[in-house]
Length: 411
Image (cartoon, rainbow, N blue to C red):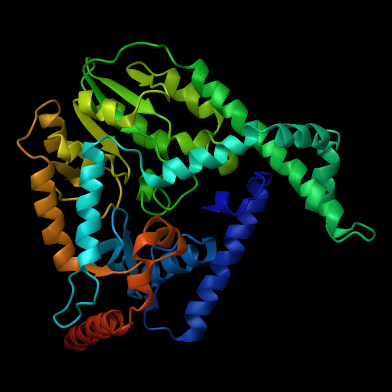
């Protein structure tokens, strides 16, 4: 979680420890003095302090509510959390909101796009943005920036930001120099990954597509499996020796614009590349192809599990993904069942998944977006979202807590 706020990956353990314990004491003080009866968040907290406060509320027994984004549609589901257990809350009668047809249509479009092996829209946007680094003016600018000593940039920005005589323009130059340093580290990451590739054809394998980090999909949604090294090694230990585990890096992790160095180290690839039975897959191989030819898919919370479902492949989800329970999608608690059926195909497919999605969304989901990222992805629905009124959500929250406190009074 601290990776998000350590902008240039410069904090050491002592700084991180002090920052964490300061936030924790502030959260405990706030809980003690505010008299709060519940914690309400628009989505699973992944701002650092909001996350610490959320966890502290859980330990204190204060009920927590947030809304979980449905990644394939402009929709969200109410989730309660108490003592670390997450529970989805079905939509109460009378809480339906207008525009819900957009939710079902988006889910259907998602399935149709995968059938055509199309890349997600956000990946196409990131690829387009990455190309700016190949332009002549950007290469010339970066060459001039390298004249500024890196040590000087670090000193000015990290220790002497308040020094007199340093103009805003000068600070901007030093900021750009540090960003360039970060892009260089991302380039080194990509080189380290490519060096571990063996250029082989994979047969008899389970596929594990990595998540971009730092991001909500692993922290906090991954729970203890926010650490993907742990996740990969644990899955490898559960598979038969004759079954390979093929791991592919998320392309965004190695894009210069995405600061992937904050969430990954070169040693990460050395670790995975040195474990018997693990192979790192080429970035040139489409994920859809790896899913199509694998025995099964493992992910922390990624929609690769849904894509496997459409192909009749079993998938295993380690974290708190909204789609656990979809056809052929197994939760962490179902690990024994999952390992038994690795390699077996199911009659499930696109139609079966669409039936499940329709039932799930109709039971739990509200039409809406929980943050600006969702709004960008579903920009085509903005006109319908702009006229949304909060009645449905406010009534849902009101009914939930009315029921909760009535139950608490009886107990």
